[in-house]
Amino acid sequence: MKNLYMLFYAFIFVLISCEDEPKPKASFYYWKTIFNLNNEEKIMLKENNINKIYIRYFDVALKDNSPLPLLPIIFKEKPENLEIVPVVFVKNEVMLNQSLNISDLADKIQNLIEQINKKNNLHIKEIQFDCDWSKQSRDNYFAFLSLFKTNFKGSLSATIRLHQIKFLKLAGIPNVDRGVLMYYNMSTLDSNDNLIYDRNIAKKYIKNLKDYPLKLDLALPVYSWIIHRRNNKVLALYSKTDTEQFYLGNNFKVVRKNQVIAKNNLLKDGIFYKKGDIIQIDAVQKEDLYEIIKDLSPKLKNTPNELIFYDLDPINLKPFSDEKRFFQKICNSF
Image 1 (cartoon, rainbow, N blue to C red):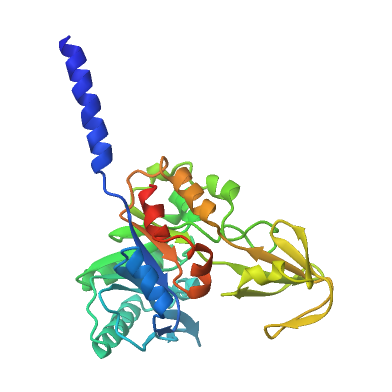
Image 2 (cartoon, rainbow, N blue to C red):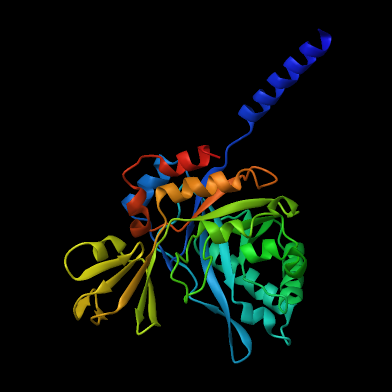
């Protein structure tokens, strides 16, 4: 009888522990060169209790074999009631440069972030770096992060790609306070499948997710794009495009789930489509996001603190705007 009581109380404790485990909070990436929220974006943030956004501050690329900041963010308005996390996208070519002065680069990046913050009266607690590092660039990048972490008083995070999870020994672990797993961009332009999110591809990369030693939050896709092909060659990739238009009217014919073909020569939104051009439409639906949570929940070592949706834009929000508090519901489904 005593053992039965012990089992009963242990069962109740497990139930209470599961119920008390906090759900992830929703946040967003803001990936534009000018910060200026419209009413639709403000309403969505308020409805979903979102008080944190990750703003792309600038990119870092190589020019004449030297790192150069590109398109620093311009604030048309000051973010109100929002915690701001600057995100710096560093092209892998920068870290591949064998003559890179890591200390100088760290100083310049930190100084530019501080200049932007001072000009706009912004105060930050965290900085995030986004770099798809490789085996060849790993040592430079990790040394850069370690140095930056020493000099910066706040928290440091870094994006993690799926291949860096799967090939852990080759990729290594960055010296940051936490990682953000980017759960999108899963294939290459020569694929006919959804490049943004493909469940079958994703599953191949998350089998050993619990072995990853770094605390992980998740970056989830809420964007779409179109891939324009002619004679089996990719002409262009267009983002921030209303994909519904390709299924309406008589200009295009559906040839498979995510592809249409131009029936005639036409000019649409400043883009010329020749008869026979293939348009691949990659998008993420509501059910895809719930599916992602279902697949990742048992694979992660810990429940994420955040689900960061990429990215905040009226066109991206359109497929989800008919359901209030949708992004909060996604978080609660974890």
